[in-house]
Length: 295
Ligand code: MLT
Ligand code: MN
Ligand code: ZN
Image (tube, rainbow, N blue to C red; front, side, top):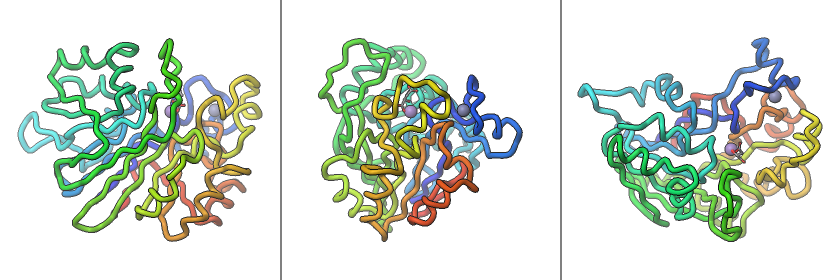
């Protein structure tokens, strides 16, 4: 199985268009690599590719990735569909860029499909360009030889949903396995907290691509002095500190552990930061956009 990290930044990307924090300013000056909004692609055979989320940057991401180039026929594409972990704008809006793509299938949990029908009504809109399949299921096969299971990992609804069911499974993780190699990816870019049973899921994988939005619990307030919305409200467990994901990941030393969905305030955007050294020292990784994993 090939896994390509198309984008590794949280919503807004890095740098974020309206942010002049120190990290974004350094990125503008060319001192730190820019990152597009979080999205990945997986394939079991190198010919049929599935997107993990569809970021608003998907057009640029597809054009930058030779494996996802169109062909051989004039309107052929190796993109078969999208697996959504949630209905957040930075994960779903890329569907509009794919409009008209023939025969795509979108997999998402029922509340996510509901939101894309009623609150951010892309589903009806997109079906008028080309009819797509919209599926919810906890276990399914993907063209190209991959086996998927979906796992509810959180109940945080997108901000744009007016009156969300607070107990609904708004956020999923996916386990994607290539039975031919035994390699398995756990893809969980949105984790409000370490979910029950998540250690068992990681034990069944060879690689995890995980929520690295915030390095520390007070980062958002201190970087942009917003003071209001802390990370717990934002629905992302921090990397470091008590209850952070790095401590939990230490229980899985044999697992390849990669952080993604980095917010523009995150010191992990700077490879020379002490935060980056701490993550590397703990055996976890931060990779550049375009990186490929083979599992
Ligand atoms: C998130 O990751 O929590 C969301 O993408 C926030 C947002 O809407 O920007
Ligand atoms: Mn996001
Ligand atoms: Zn910034």
